[in-house]
Amino acid sequence: MRRSILAAVLLSAGLAAWLGSRPLSELLGIERRPTAPAGGLASAPAERPLTAVRVRESVAVATAPELVLSGLSEPARLVRLRAELAGRVVDTPVAQGERVAAGAPIVRLDRRERPERVRELEAKLAQRELEYEAASRLGARGFQAETRVAEARAALEEARARLAEARAELERTVIRAPFDGRLERRLVEVGDFLEIGQEVAVLVEPRPFLIVARVPENRVGALRPGLQGSARLADGRTLEGRLRFVAGRAEDATRTFRIELEIADPPADLAAGMTARLTIRLPEVAAHRLPASVLVLDDAGRIGVRLVAEDDRVRFTTVEIVRAEGGTLWLAGLPERARVITVGQGFVGEGERVSVRPEPGPEAGGPAA
Image (cartoon, rainbow, N blue to C red):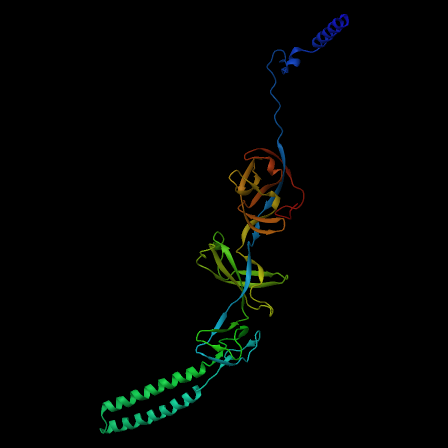
């Protein structure tokens, strides 16, 4: 018992000595303000240092914007040949994939009795011609009534019409190529029986060829026929061409507009349906060449860059990306000369005064640092 009392007394004495050695304000967490100097007011707090940023002096240069799209190759002209009369196939002189000249036969049908029908009508026409000549001579002399002459003329015209129809039907037994092209597909073989309107072959014109793409409605306004472009195929080849068509009406399903880049001299192995990266070169605009890292978003979600004005205060300016290559962008919408923040743009705000440090290296829109 005596030992416990003695320990309590010693602990109380040590705590009292510790409390007495430190100011009460420090123990309670109260900040002590410095005392004002004699005869004056308290000194003003120190000013916050300015945020340091790297700035590039950029000058706009004439740049050709590029619109990049995904496209597919397509022949400029494709025709599906169909039978104009019923009949059995007796000959297919052109193999699938071969080139044919305009007028060359692709499929022949059995002519059956059609040649004999033509010869019969030719003889009938010769008879009607003689009858009409005789009636005309007699009518001129007054030995033949005008009605008889008119009947002879009507019979003559009917014979001519029947002969022309028979000759056309005989000609339709041969299905010919309407233009120089390549037989892309042949859908019939010897022995097949064709109905009227049945598809027999697909013929494509090998040149020119098209690269077809769809453009969103917010970009179609910058396009017009005649602009130059290029198409990069999946195998790495690049084909140069000219924009020949821009649709004036959007497609209902996608709300996009069809455009066609014409390749005047395509390679022989260019086939329909090949994918291509289509690049259309638009009219030149003034743009700044800057690294992609300078882009920021404002509170409204608009894309832009932060500039330093003449008073060394930050200004946000929206931009339009007119061209991109790797990590380098060409940006329109900035003044002709601009001090663009390239380092530290994410740590400063609109109207804030900053400490400007020039970016080392080339100026005037040079390569990205």
